[in-house]
Image 1 (cartoon, helix red, strand yellow):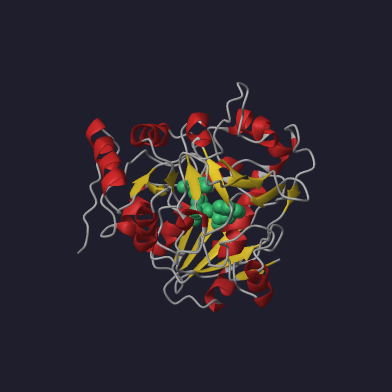
Image 2 (cartoon, protein in one colour):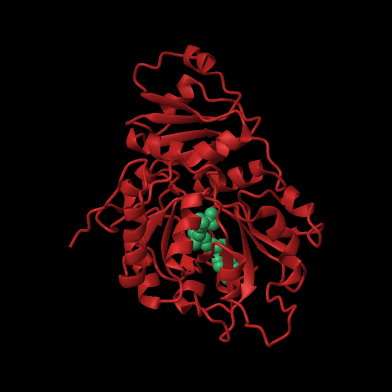
Length: 377
Ligand code: TXA
Ligand code: MG
């Protein structure tokens, strides 16, 4: 039977939080909640039935490891080996000390080893049977409050239906998951807009970044022990080559769960790398776009010039400007994909931005490159 979402627009009262806690404790129906990166779809990370509920709602196969959310270091320690009596015992590895101090609560996920000695034991469906897990302390006050009140570690992937762009508004979650979940806590727009940066400080060859995100690599490098952090991810579309599939089956370089196409609108995404010539109306007319073309602008493209390049009568154009600030672009990208999907365009042209692996721009372009079917440079 279809579930109806209970959703109080723009307000969260104590009663909705209590309902959320009750659902998390007593059902296998996950709860959508805001974080500063994107909305998450949360379930008790220790309970297999509850974690499977996430996959049922997202309609996604259950072989990706999920990020485990906590509201305090005290909660994190309940997932780690317990004290053997010593007074100054600290189960959180030293390598993460500087990162936690600087970036938590915030858009950073750290990889830790699992243990069967811990007070809280993660379901194998949370970790995809790996011997490690990703942990993150989000900064959204509602997320922290929910974690505190339910007193559980919450496994939470982004609250979109499988393959759709990550949700940065409660409306996006409703669009994808109404009928499949019961409650959305609405905390307004996500402030960062791209997912957390995932780092592993314990890998054999030294610290690595497994996923670029809200904390830039340049910021990580300012922290003790992270000066030489390596980047271990690829920018191409996921699972689109055999080589990539093989890399995943060797689960190398410890970044599993990357084989599905993520972040994609329904329309075909064409990325104009920075410096590529902006499209003209004749170009747009020759594109495969009977229903219309969406344009996501970040800074430089001059729409007047594009429109002056020819008559646009038989091409429907929608133009969304999400720039020029880097943080605005990060906040606006996924929402722009969704807005243009709602116009039912066939093609979305994206104006790429200058980026290096070190910057937030790198994380943004990583998302666009994964969504793009065609790149123009
Ligand atoms: O910003 C975010 O991180 C959002 C919000 C909701 O917190 N969550 C999110 O979760 O993006 P999810 O489940 O979509 O991301 C899981 C990703 C995996 O694809 C993998 O890249 C990494 O986190 N990951 C999780 N556990 C891992 C592990 N044990 N080893 C390596 N990578 C892991
Ligand atoms: Mg996701």
